[in-house]
Length: 192
Ligand SMILES: Cc1cc2nc3c(=O)[nH]c(=O)nc-3n(C[C@H](O)[C@H](O)[C@H](O)COP(=O)(O)O)c2cc1C
Image 1 (cartoon, rainbow, N blue to C red):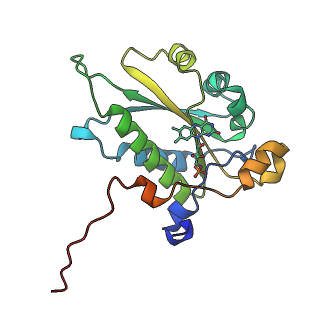
Image 2 (tube, rainbow, N blue to C red):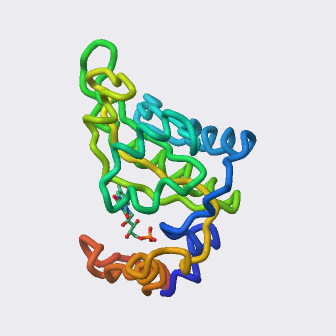
């Protein structure tokens, strides 16, 4: 089934590298992105995600850019904002929150879908130095930096260097659904 048969918010979501480099993230839009994160489901409603929004041009943005891998640092700084998501993996009493990483990923997905509804693009990045981020923002033990999101308005791929423009315009691929199924879906025939 082609991706175009899905809801447009899902069908049109991609992870671009070309962002409008003089765009800003408006406060009302930013607020809705953070509310989407806040209203995400979590195990026992523990809400273990923690977030930092760094607008282009701020010291926080410079700190996040410094933590990116060279490949990501080549394009991600153009986005209007970089958003750090961290997972609080231990509770106040020191017990482990076993779903914290799962919950934080799901919160990232909620933020991403809201961003798409706002006409923005999100590119998630695991390619960053977590220790750099931990020190730069004074993250305590038990709060694990998970991902940095580039958030902004998509620009034309032609403004990227050739090797990145090629990746931007390459056909998107996925495993076949059959490869994802632990077992074929079974049905009970209710016709009789
Ligand atoms: C947890 C996570 C980490 C990722 N890390 C990077 C990264 O460091 N650099 C990058 O260019 N893309 C990164 N991506 C983007 C994926 O490569 C991308 O989602 C995937 O190729 C599918 O493409 P699509 O999002 O356009 O459908 C990451 C995505 C996720 C969810």
